[in-house]
Image 1 (spheres, rainbow, N blue to C red):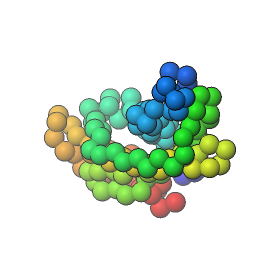
Image 2 (image 1 turned 60 degrees about the vertical axis):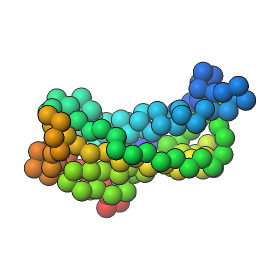
Image 3 (image 1 turned 45 degrees about the horizontal axis):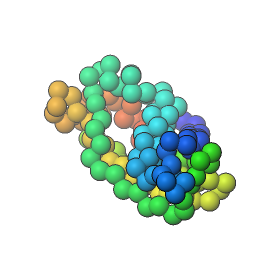
Length: 137
């Protein structure tokens, strides 16, 4: 399985606060954009997983802000799987502008079907295997 390409997000004017700095809440959205892109690159986009009636709610999110970003900055977001079980994945995110880290973050997601936990190794084995191959990188 090839390495994933980083996701790139250009900061929009409306994403900045009165001080001209990207509002902290937007980084959660950037994480989602990057995660969706990562899954697309893996070949298991949300539409494919959700067509199987499997959904992936967020359990927790953490962000550690290192440097501010501003309008027109291009944030390059590297997404990795840092931990996985049959029912939960932890994604890690390193966000950089011009090679300098601006934010380190993590999100944890479970998997459900009909509002009940589901074991991906049994329910979506190809997806589970593909993600596992990324964990080993």
